Length: 268
Image 1 (cartoon, rainbow, N blue to C red):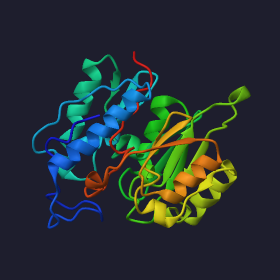
Image 2: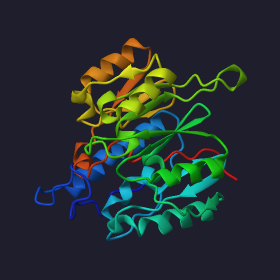
Image 3: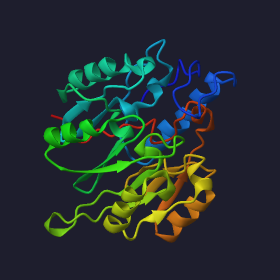
Image 4: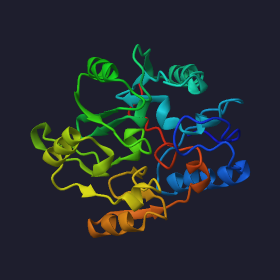
């Protein structure tokens, strides 16, 4: 995670960002701190990367890379405003014992790459390129399922899919459960999701519009926006424990709970 000490909206690279709308850095810090403390209360370990002045979106650490088994595949941002974040994250990975893979293709890390069981779901359409999916497959040697986003409000995969319990079943069979927002994807991707995850939660547009799916789950506790009331009810019906954390100030920059959270899976 990264404290939003420099958070503001001074440019526009997604439909949520309106520089003319005032932002409250102190409020963003306060809300972020609640998320940080919630993770600790749930028993998770949290590590911090230092914020860099002039990089207001660095708080959205999910975009900084993708980490499996101690290997960190670095980010290569589409927009120049976020470009300098990439070397900062790669330096952090290297100094904390991860094997760093320098990317060739444009990709925005765990914003577009989600591990579901032993399969990587990979988004494209607005930020990460198709070529990055092939690069991802070469780096990690796992199945990569490409999904195309078509609604500009949901420009990263983690705004339209939430992996609820990333479990691999007997014989490597993928038993991960997910929630997703169907209309955020093209028809082919909707068919793929329906076939691979027939028991998935299908979220409403109302819950998607408050970044309800931009959530973080440990398999039982699912940290979500308190405004995603329908999604909260769906989770309870399935036996999950929704944990409500308001990041409304950070939504002004186009990010939510998962955007502010990069999972570190295994250290070299």
